[in-house]
View 1 (spheres, rainbow, N blue to C red):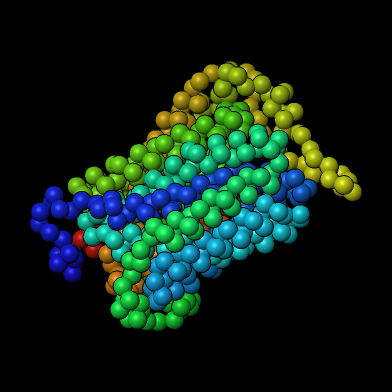
View 2 (cartoon, rainbow, N blue to C red):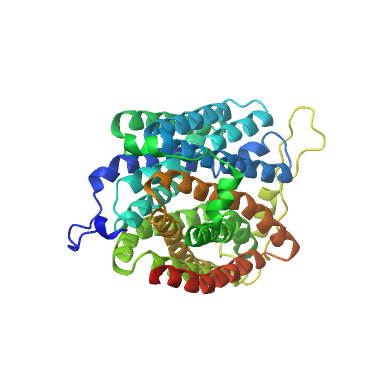
Length: 451
């Protein structure tokens, strides 16, 4: 089926960056808004006097709402075109950020995250645009550029958040409004830079209901596509848990404060940019999606298992008394008695400080970032090659919804394991799950290659 779309001349099979550049710019601007908010949202919520359990629930509101909304918008993009649905989702994001920036109560924050989540098909619709604009040979590299935009966002978003807080003297409303500004710019970019990529005849041919549980389960029953969607969910549970718990793990094992942890995220962001912006294109052309998926699973498994074994050696500049004092800060809101207490995390002792733990964790993050960086684009690329053109948007919407579901499950399950069994076990269990998936994928993907 794909042979008619692929030429035998390898020089022709290169990604057309001119087609991809507009959507890359749009996604990058969009993600700058998102990555400004992500690091600050728990602290922003804490200023309203809610406890850590409620903060955790708040963190799950967005992915749960996105789980509901993304498949609907994905199917609508198949029926009505990519551009109008992308604009609609961006407008929802803008409204969510404005509500967040003007919130006077925790319920306004919850409402802002629900609206943003329900309309949060920006990424899956952008993936559909890229799928429309690439050949099967170049699709993995094209989808990898979205991951590169994520990496760039996680490098610069926290910096923008820090500067906006510095200028506003720690007014948490300001970063949210700055994020709204970036969202508005992304809407303008979509209006004036992006051309519709989904042909009108395909929009008319799109069939089936907008969304249904029956359609979801029918998609999951399809031999290769169903396996890839299950793979997408569980790899994100493992990798998403790693991302969500990295700060708590680093505090517990290394005594790293917020600034030190931010450096770790910048390090991961740079690695992801390199992998998804450069290497994944070369690897996909040379080895194919099946190889990338299997490599990503085993490399990420190794990274998580090594990370779980990080020695409890605090960094040389760590001071337990200062860190405890910082962790025990409270904020009393009017009429609140007693003040809200922060989450309690066991801290390392001041004894035996050194660089061993930090170097160990940084080394483990290299395979973790490589594996996590290649999996999503390679899985989604293989999905798009396994369905009809008029099903791409809807199937990518299901993929994005499963990602959202995984992002809701990961912090809840990982936090329970962290507290119940110990800090080592979330990463260790995640690595073992990935190892099982790697073993399973060898058979499933081999079967698909032989067809």
